[in-house]
Image (cartoon, rainbow, N blue to C red; front, side, top):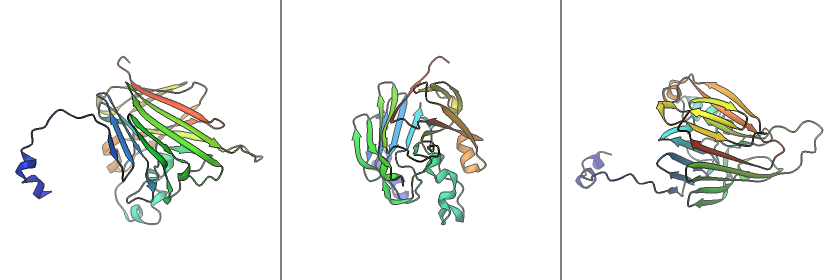
Length: 253
């Protein structure tokens, strides 16, 4: 870092116009696509990476550079953060990331639980998430996320073996962790982001029920970024095989 600071070639560079070209970080399987209004980031990879969260297929979105669909981030470091109980911490679990919960089952930990058939697209990414879940009856879960024109499009298509048990089928959810104020009505959520950024509206079919849960942030490492709480949106897709969620800015609220 000190060498970079005193390097005249680096230090004399004049900042140019911001580039909005897509970014593909192949070793981490992270795709970033931006417009002047919205940013989309999606992570493939596996659940055995250094400093890992269980987050294969994670989608993060920002409006005017302010995160709306978020990863809560790291807590204050303790012995537990890097000990055998690491994944008992809520912010490390896939249940609190923007990924599916399949018949009540979270993603598993370890390098064997990974994204497959990862394909960066011109405006986003497509990837297979089934390998991240210890759910034998999950045949496939393909997530495609794109930034198309003025909106983010998240398409999930999956195949589960029929539920044959006598008891009720555990819920399959598509989850989103949100920073800002959230107002949910049938088929949509209006989100007022932090820092005065332009609001966004998320939409989905009206017959899909969306439950919300509030998570109080007691760790100052988290609350300093997101405020006193974050909101989790849980779209119940039990018995379905696909879902499309759209997100776009709202100018007049």
